[in-house]
Amino acid sequence: MEIVKHKRVKLNRVLPFGGVRGGLFLLLLVFACCKGGDDSSDFYLNVITEFAMVRTDASGKMFELTTDAGRTYTLSNPQEGYDKNARYRAVCGFVPDGQTATLHSAIGAYMLRDSTKLAHEPDPIKVTSVWQSGRYINMQLAPLTQGGIQYWGYRVDEVKGRTTHLSLHHRQNGDPLSYTETVYASLSVDDLATIPAGDSIALHIKTFNGDRVWAFKKP
Image (tube, rainbow, N blue to C red; front, top):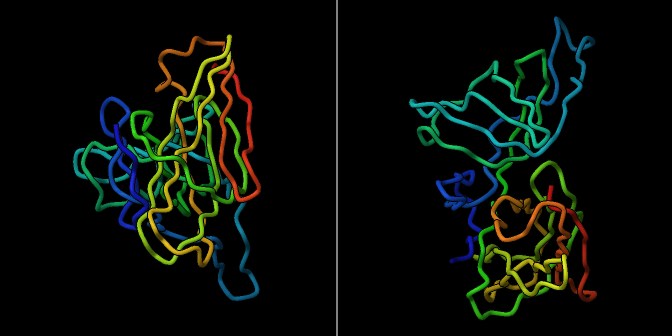
């Protein structure tokens, strides 16, 4: 049981049994617009932005993404230089075309791990949005930082009837409350093996304005 460090190194790799390693925030590529024959013919593509799982092959080439809705696309512009036979959680900007897609951007997202056994109380954090897509609970957070290491995880707090109460386990770790960064995180409901399908999940996040709660159902 451990918490993932906030450290700008690479996209998080999803390891067997739901574990992760690594940090956050490598912008893989950005081609937000395409250029025609001259400057007057520039145009912006209809880029879809979604959370997805991205896979690499035996050579470390990023070749496939699967959205939370379960749609899988083969990348028309595979990216090289990643771990072999790995999966990454990312916010992807892409343009689909049938069974293929052109990847225009990918920002790493944390896969939160169970930190219930750790005794630390969570520190407050700014929350931009929290929502469920497919079998994931996704978050866009806005931590205050001065470039230090912060920690992330989730805790199982209690079960009341058919509702399991979880909390985001965020530790500021002495990092001064300075400028705002954007952090993306996901919690796989499949990791919550003790919660039956159809039961409720209440996610608590401690903010600077008090405790906020989001309610979900386990698919």
